[in-house]
Length: 255
Figure 1 (cartoon, one colour):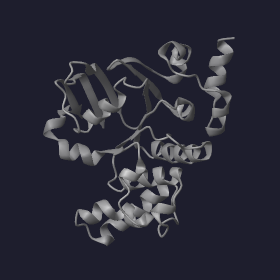
Figure 2 (cartoon, helix red, strand yellow):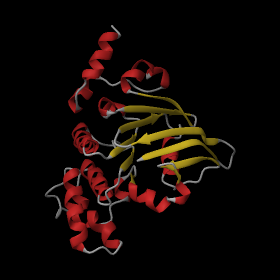
Figure 3 (cartoon, helix red, strand yellow):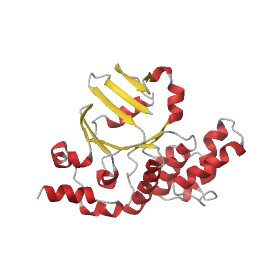
Figure 4 (cartoon, helix red, strand yellow):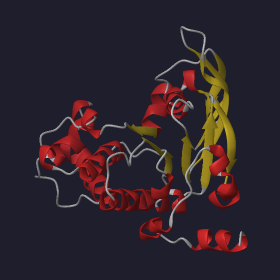
């Protein structure tokens, strides 16, 4: 699928612009990191992509169709995982939570059970079904939120600051789950300031500032610009989360 946001403008009551002509196109499958400083507009942009906010001007297209004409379909094809996973956990046990959406929609268990099994496996939660959600770690709750979103079999999953509060082990487990999704053909859009936890795995890095997309390219292409964009460069420790061969090549070229 192709999700395209063109020239979005969103002004607040005081006249300031949260979005000031923001444009972005996402095609699946891909792994895109969307970053920028606080107040840059990145979370606001993705809320518009799902019809949770209405722009003052601009347009949003899903496979060249206006979002307003295919909103229900778009929300089936695009899943959003919020910053705080507790806001999306509605079941007592892991399996109950993963089953909540299709059960609430009136589906029969024999219809959704295979999808629930597949979603839990994709999120690295096979065997977790009977466990209480309240006893999960922060990383496990994030992966449960991902699993619950995957039950609807979306083509694109959007995660808003998924690494907040996670240690390296939790971040690594979550990232592994996201990479499996990317390999299976699902698009992944990660909105984060925590680039060191995912930059080595991203196909693209998109940077926002003052409500606009100011840079869009591969991590290697934008590596030298990160400090001037107000973003921290990945340190060597991120190598624990994946192949950093591209980073070593860029560092060697830079001397």
